[in-house]
Length: 309
Image (cartoon, rainbow, N blue to C red; front, side, top):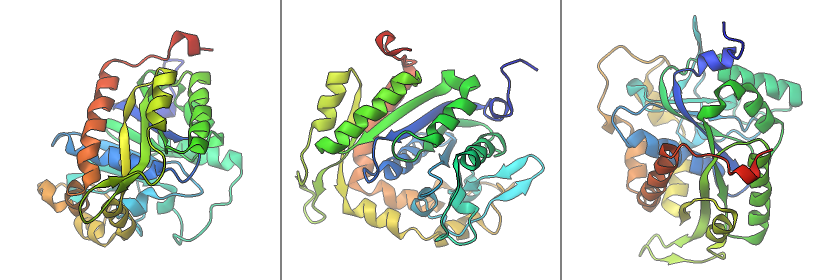
């Protein structure tokens, strides 16, 4: 066995790209951006395989947003089987501590070592299989979870990259700068920055109003030499869609087991969450963001020399 080979590197050897979604503070919509990124990567091609890992251990929200609340994970001879948001198509795999709680309202009261152990399990014991992309939703700020992630994934560092999410307000931008400083300190490539909650989309006429300030994220990206991936206004349709997901539809689509079925794959139309998401204004805006993310990945993004430690 190669000296650099670890249980994590063996498990992730068939994952082409790993994108870590970061934010300097909470409340900027990082998890909704992670969910949209995973959905848009999924719909970019009928063969693209995507995983989304929720390592926000004390506030897991990805299961809710994907309509997977109430699902549990199953153990197989080859490790934990992730929950598939698209049912028998089995191209959108999800793992979260939310699947392991007896009640979804239970709190996770863990110290650093236990968090570290759980993250290692998610990376080394989950049967991710072949993935084109693994999107990792992290807690806000830079903490034990982020350091644990990078420590365990050191052997696959060449496939790591990140996206920073902020809102236009000055306080959020200050925290986003700290997040950027973290990526530079640990040599984590940044694909670009997304400004979320940049205005408000009127549900009646579609007009965008600047409830908060706007353009701060783009200015920060320009100043720091980052690619500006785009801005996303507050979209009430999207909020209602992600908040209303209760798992009923996903459960009926996936059947009684989280194992991928050997039966012929159902058409993509069976993925009702994706169907409804595709009709939102956010989905149209995210197409441009995805194009820029793909362009950054194809450029084999490097950390600027001046930022290296």
